[in-house]
Length: 197
Image (cartoon, rainbow, N blue to C red; front, side):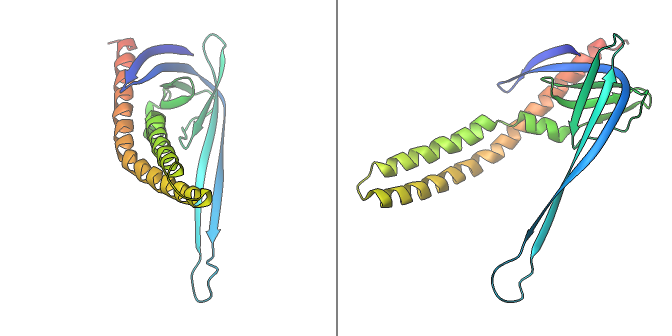
């Protein structure tokens, strides 16, 4: 594994890494989570069932120097088999989002994983938490009985935190997509500098 670049994408520092190696083995598995709900009311109410499948793939690579690497992918499955040569690139040693199979010439990109990585969690969740805590504190310092203040403080804090979370979610998604685009552009720039012309 080698570090191929560093950058900052809208206040988020990141490093880019690359692993090139021959596939020694590959395992793929899926987990399905099923949820069901049946209303407790009397009458002809339909229940709801939903399921979500998550696919996991581990690719074991061996580089030219004999180093071995396990590349773990979630909901990003790469068609490969033993003996194929892969170039795997990603951010911060654990998020692989760009894979090239040199035997087939096919390239794969995982935009959703990169967008999750680039999402400004601290700003969105922190902002909502701070507002909720401030509302709770303001109500707890007001006049009235403790139980009443606690009830309205938790209710007001929860509602205001949820509203702020909702208001910050959309800008957070926009920032995440902008960060992801900057990281992809940096990767293409770095990879282009390494490739022979």
